[in-house]
Length: 248
Image 1 (tube, one colour):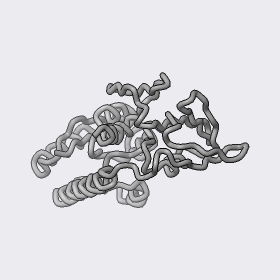
Image 2 (cartoon, rainbow, N blue to C red):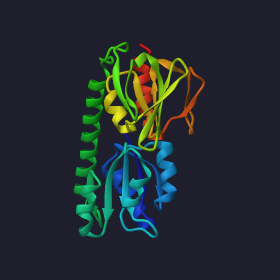
Image 3 (cartoon, rainbow, N blue to C red):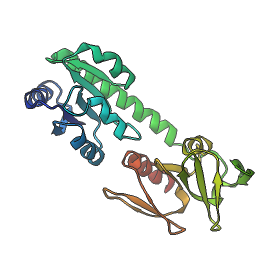
Image 4 (spheres, rainbow, N blue to C red):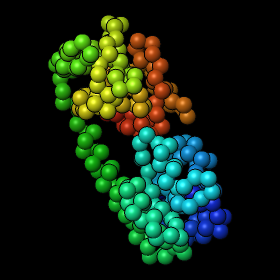
């Protein structure tokens, strides 16, 4: 069952689409509807839906504006609009579908089926990539650039990382911290296939040193050095899966 949210400023359009989905796409469950972008951001973050049906032309904010509120897009988007000329913009926004109003039933079914295939493909790829243990030896030294040269650290020495502008603080098991010139995105690539995992736009943690994980709306992890680090909504699923695999 796919969970979906409908965002459209016109009540008639929202109701029509919901009825069409119930009749022709029973695999889709509409969990919320809204008439504007801003009120949906918190709902999307809370429910983490599989799919958003998103009107483009709405008062105050374009439907494209919603995408800017998320560090990571973990949901599929089907744009709905009465105007053909937004198609290129929708393509650049990585939309799964683009439906013209009034919505054609066959096109709706085709778009939903495409969403299902995309999610199945993504889940299959994720299963393959996460079913293996980290391949980098946690005791092997990795070279990390700093403003004063290069430092050499092992994964086991690192408790967590925190971004500071275009630099990254690396907090160590012995209580020290060093400032690397790597960005957080660089760190993701450097520590790929290790026990270091990004849990927020500003934080990475070593799974081996997570002492407690508080799962709530404002989720956070408590590390062995006493630091509490926020878990971004778009990173929760990945953290849950990684912890379940790491604990085996």
